[in-house]
Length: 409
Image 1 (cartoon, rainbow, N blue to C red):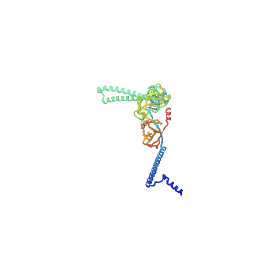
Image 2 (image 1 turned 180 degrees about the vertical axis):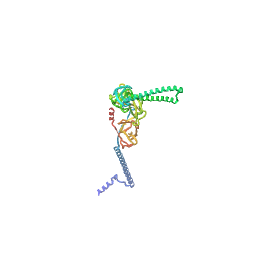
Image 3 (image 1 turned 90 degrees about the vertical axis):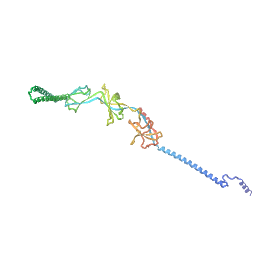
Image 4 (image 1 turned 45 degrees about the vertical axis):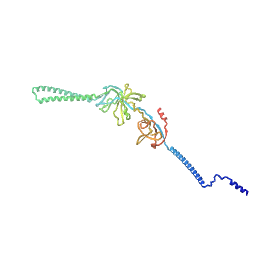
């Protein structure tokens, strides 16, 4: 009994536990609301944190996907061209005057007096043609002319006597007119005979083949005894070798930049690259509609005669263009489609931009661009057909080592 009473006393003296609910119901409700609000706030904070982490992860994933899908392009840069440039064109040397000599009469070649390589002067005899029947025709024409002269003298003397008789009224007027007309007819016949003799004499002169100008014989195509037909068979080819001439055809893009008197350089290949200075003598006033080029004639002195007509040479013409130097780009940056010719440029933000251009000269691996790009533009080499305007790309600079090696070579 004592033991139970002591336990009751001890239990009554103990402090209530901390988690014990207060005995007031209102305070209990406030306490429960606070705990629920805190729990809700905790859940909201945790959900917001989780949502933010999910957004960050999604953005990172999108960036990684975009980075993995982003195209890489190889880019190159333009280089400045030359405002003054030199064009090299092929040409062949030819004589200042060249001609093929033909016969003007039919006959047999009786002799030739000059052969290939001989220097001849103007009017010098080259060959002789034998025309036996021509000599007979000429003798006959001269005899006929002599007969007409005799008849004319007789007619004139007769008319002179008839004039004396007419003064004395001893002749009929009609008979006097007949004598006078006989003189006129004889004079006309004599004129005709003289013309015929002159014609035959000219044909006889054609039997002597002479040089039309001073030069060198470059071909001889006839042998003694050959039957020569007028105007069909070449006998000789004659060339004037000092000075020489050469003709070049300048493309349309440079046609306006070549002037009369302009100095050019002629390179003779067989003379170990020897060069000779010459000047432009004549420039055609129009372009050839077939090849779209302009004819330019150049005269080349050849006093020593070492330059041979027919030789292949290369003529270099200095072309002075605009003061603004054009840009030169690799040919693989060009894109040609229905819209024209353009290039693909990567801007400062690595976006694709298409620029239409105006092309200049084509050097094969490189081309000249006159308008459409700036010196600091980054150009896409071998652009893909899948590239679109505004697309963002990653840039890979092309190696410049091959270009440097090419420049050194």
